[in-house]
Image (tube, rainbow, N blue to C red; front, side, top):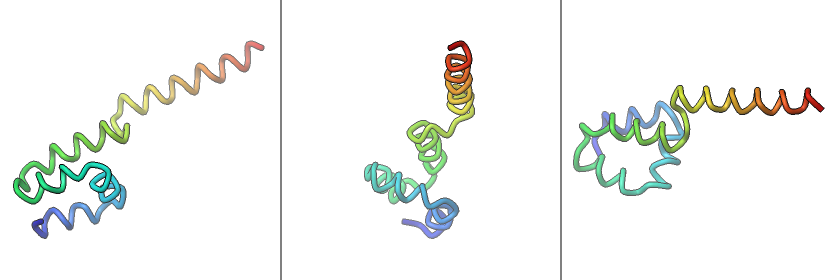
Length: 71
């Protein structure tokens, strides 16, 4: 794997965990390092790190709080 990719993976330890869970990405990044952006997109979907996922989490917490307040 290229050193630029390794440096980018070092920015977040969770990237390595995601690579362990999805070894196909290790192979893809070794052959096509330009697909790192695709890896990040897949990582965000898999780990629910997108903005829409955070909004859904907040909405779920608000619904839970509303349920407790009604009782």
